[in-house]
Length: 606
Ligand code: M6R
Image (cartoon, rainbow, N blue to C red; front, side):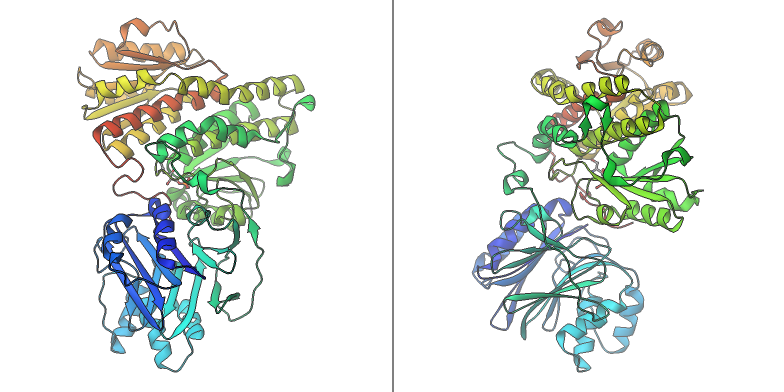
């Protein structure tokens, strides 16, 4: 979590940093800070709250200079407060940090014995103290930083400056950090959208890399003191993609971007005449030998995995196990050489998902990541990667990432089905034709949203919601419930509809809205039975279906109909109105939709 940005160039750093920090706020937003270097002095400003609160602190004109660092925090060690906000300054050294220093207690103890005094409750503060300790022992600045980084256990992305020298140093280990290369200017940032309006050329730092910005140049080395070379990548995202573009919130914009995002996901993948979906770049293992496929992720991405499991098992007849990434390694999973481990992550930086990938690699299985962010850890370190091409997702609540991930699973399933001879050319062609219609069908939903706004008004005061669905719709309702709870703070629980009778039915009365997803597919009859059970207990039902003549339509509180499609793709269509209902309720309640309390977009701590 936490967002870092740095600038060294020819222009005033302050505005550049604040604008970039604003775009990183989704990573954490409980406090923010800035440090600007000018003529051997560093001005530091810090504030509890958001970047806009920090603006007041720096409005005094003291923050002038062409080199600086800034940080937006998601608290791990120490409450959100000014004293715990970054940058942390010790004497003339300032540091911004994202990650967790696992051995900070031990390091603090050692430094205290050397006479160092600490001013915050953070793990980060040991970093400037260690640098000072090495400087005091006669090391130069770069060497002092290098030795300090060698002493840290855990994860870090850091930006460091010192008053006495016009040098900025950035480094990373297991936390994201990229270097932006502009025209006689350099940037460091936790991700590309932060500075995409100034450059689209990036170096993706690798673990233990240090970038040293001195004079008009930058050089790279590692923490062993060796020079390293890294390629400059050009990213095809634009500044406008990271703006709200007239929408009230990023989340709403991203919901509306889904038709375009999915079209991008599908682009260039199909050889329709051959009934083929192309993933040849992956060098997948021999699929005939694959005994099991694992799908592992967190949050929304995990729900996509559950949908992937339904698709794969039904069509490939290969057993699939899904796991929440934070649980995966603790159960000592029995991975075998011929398994495939699929890691799904919008950011590609989720710490638990990265840990799951490492578990897979240790066990010698082929790891495949499905990611949105180019240059992210999962994208770089997995054996194969499929990009979702959804464009930057800024809203903390994941929306277009989810529907593009499902689209990737669908295409991958078709690719594998062909290789395994599980589907013939015509079947695959028909399925390709279905997914190609999905962007248009989502657009149809988005063109008829006023009933959803109306529903939101009717239900916004409810304190609890139950979401139910069967089969592939169970993960869909889990996703719907997650959307509602994370942005509106209303308690919402998702259940497999058949599980209702095993406990949660006790909750049902005339006050509890029950959201049910019940398309006309193999789950239809049984879910109708569950709807009856809710009605018998005077529950209030909101039905989402693809069937305009659903037999329960007249007996429920409200119905919303989505276009028809095949079973595997229904989650994409059904989740869109669930995203919108959550959005409208949160908006009516006046919560901070894009940056809901206690959350951060990218969870880079385990
Ligand atoms: O970047 P990732 O897809 O790995 O993130 C995983 C979860 O943190 C994320 O999906 C989270 O659950 C979303 N905020 C939900 O909207």
